[in-house]
Image 1 (spheres, rainbow, N blue to C red):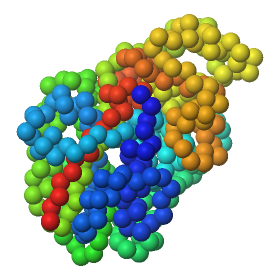
Image 2 (image 1 turned 30 degrees about the vertical axis):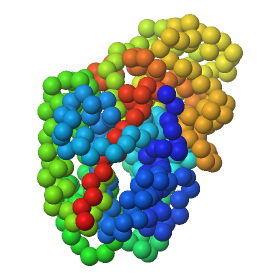
Image 3 (image 1 turned 120 degrees about the horizontal axis):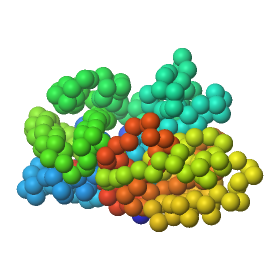
Length: 364
């Protein structure tokens, strides 16, 4: 399924910007706008990495805190992956606009494929440069700056790398409660990396994931009981799917056509093709992988607006490749067998990966 850019994370972010009088460039979520009209002093969004609708349904009890407050289901962005989705949440822009398309991105300025968040060279596994590459070449203005400039309230982020840095889930919950207790209107975005990390290691339906989600549910429920004059929303950046991998080095007829290694994601892979093979690539790809992947040309990516609407970032064409292969079954790509391969992953076009919950708790 395609991402829905009229009922998704980008619209949630724009509803927040609207609430605080800041500029926004996409539709808002009408239901969220209505809740915000009640005049809560604190607007809190907690994003739990990887907790898609499928995980909620499979692992948690119907009468538990999360499912009891699950108001609706919304769409992630494409690709449904942390880099693209959390950047959308923190910018109010679609991936085509902000350019943070996935985990690893090719930057012609340094001729390297770089992990956008960690700043590592994807294939050398060392720091790409002595500066943060993605921040330099695809910068954006975050929602906290936009809210602060608008002057109605203040914006904060609580995470390992946020404006308010924490190390543990307990610290995250405590910091949200502390900020909510302060005077003035405010938006607080809190991010936690589970259950995504556990899913990558154990598969998305393991007992360890059940335990992790039950723990998260308990902690967020306890946090919510300490809040006053607060609209709390809990959501996710994407869901997960168990998968196996095609190893590209096992396909010499494909390797000979590439001018660069693949990038972006295992289930949304950018292929950079030598000019002399551009007319052959599509046929060879579909012969080998067509039952498991949709293949989009550079032109089709923009025509179909799979990365969203809005004005494409000036580097979008370079970042997205000549072709993009998108997973529609349970397969991913690994460039070689020497690279990490997760038991469960995301970034494809299945409902399991794309749909996330919007859990809403009102604390007068």
